Length: 166
Image (cartoon, rainbow, N blue to C red; front, side):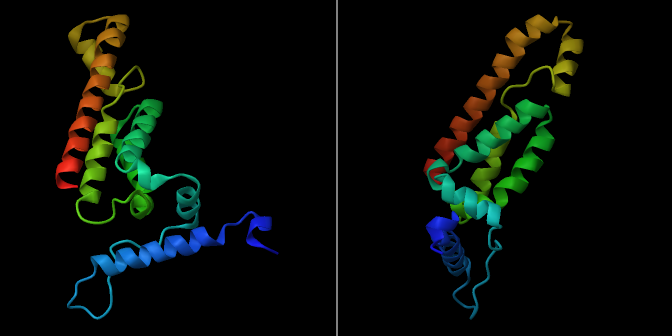
């Protein structure tokens, strides 16, 4: 049965393996006989995701966006970064962030995403609310937009840095 009829795209799996082999060869030392790859081959879900989404065009925006969504949904910056990093790591080659300063830029981008949109489900939001004596309504009007601006400014700085050291 042809690959199109089964719904499986055989070229995406071979492309991912080929891409991984190129990355392994690129990151290996010329003095060594065998290439050593810092990344293992991506799992099947990562290969399928990179085949369905143009992850290479998203670059450092995808880690920022994923971390921001996780942070906004559950409130903890720490949990958002740890969860996002476990999701993003197998996708680094597909994002074009596996070599050079890519992992560093990815971590910085996730840090910027974790600062975006602090609201009532964030414990730090309540610390600031109680210590400042402001009402919930005032905090939602001032602190939440301020954290959104802070996250966007941090991402902009990471983006500029990625263009400079890229």
